[in-house]
Length: 293
Figure 1 (cartoon, rainbow, N blue to C red):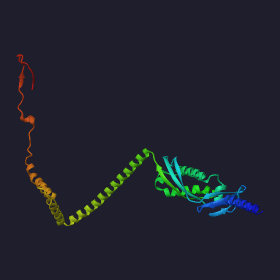
Figure 2 (cartoon, helix red, strand yellow):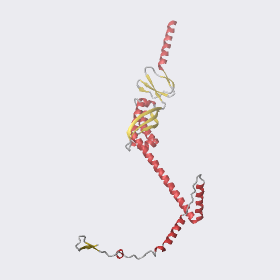
Figure 3 (cartoon, rainbow, N blue to C red):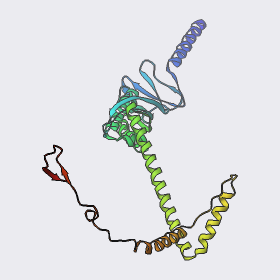
Figure 4 (cartoon, one colour):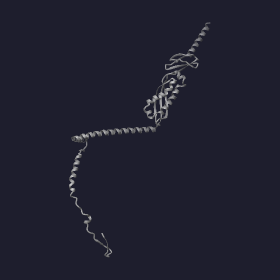
């Protein structure tokens, strides 16, 4: 009798151990457990830690609640200003509704990946090249909104979307380089012209100041001579006033004008000074005249 009781106890203990091993489950801190009992979803989501289910009746499915980093393959499209580009991005998302992520969509990762690719191609077609290169923050927000709208029903929340790289054709890169070079050349010329304008205004003010004070011009000439003489050379440049040249030119014209008046002599015509023409005899000797020179 005792042996039967011991055997029965051993069997019950073994059955209990097997049942405990079959029913025991451990849910990690970053996971949540969704239980299906005979195919029906249980409303209570199992929290992290040790939990029990009914063997052969319940099925526990664990859902990762961590933030998932999903790269979006490069998508090729034509921008609104007719430029062919290749754009790749990265999506950061996490599951906020474990039951919805398991029940409402077959594979929420694949669904988010396909939605991200479709939204990225749509963003490329609606944007211009300058926006893709310089205004990425606004495009990231628009892309995040486009992906997050259907993902909310799947129990998934999009944390952030980033456009990683924009690839351009080589011809477009060369065209943009020439455009940037021309723009820099234009700015350099404008700056140079502005400097010339400011310098001309300052020189005009200096000339007016020197015109009011002639001694300032002489001092400026002496400063120029000093600057030239300071160099190690054997040539000394002395400024020659232009007013002195003008004075000499006027004096020369004044002295040469009276000498030209008496030289105007009435000349006789050339025909009156020449002697009369003599008759020319016929070389044949018959005494007849053919003409006069």
